[in-house]
Length: 227
Image: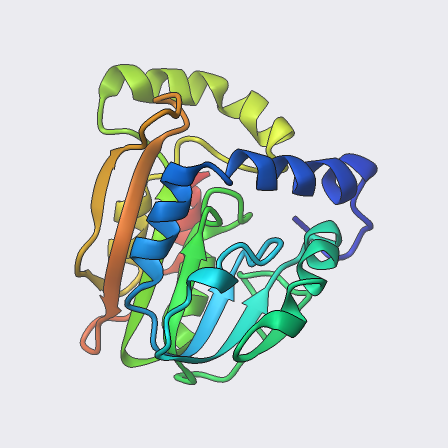
């Protein structure tokens, strides 16, 4: 999603409302709470959306820098920021180009975001860059299922999903992307979300540590593999 041109009415007005409705079910709210329980210190969150994660950050979080390129999402989030118990800086930029210093965050968060960034490998590379050594990446993402039959349907439906979901992909291999991005998988697990269609509900959830001995692979190469 580029910031150089103004988004259309659907992307600014309808999609933010629709996204909030679709991700407000009790099952998914529990996943948010479980995943974010290990967040600590200074947090970098990409795909902040309308701020749905704010209520689930634990006491150990000191501040959040929130990245959200969609102006409609930022408008909805603005109403929640004054009630946050920690400082929140909301940035209108993209995950692939973070205007932030190297090794300046303790925790990075991506919830339902790697599916829709234009270059997932580059976004993961940026999260790797801004995390302190041994920093933790927390994810709750849907992506390419391990079941070959479901994966075929995901590939077939993906062009439609990209239109309806403002760039959302059904078939990105989330765990592989994170592993190739310079992270050591810590508690990541994958499963079908209860109540969701299997094409949309293969969830990868948990955390990964920034590896001190491994840097992210060339994002341009990974982008070609996952486009």
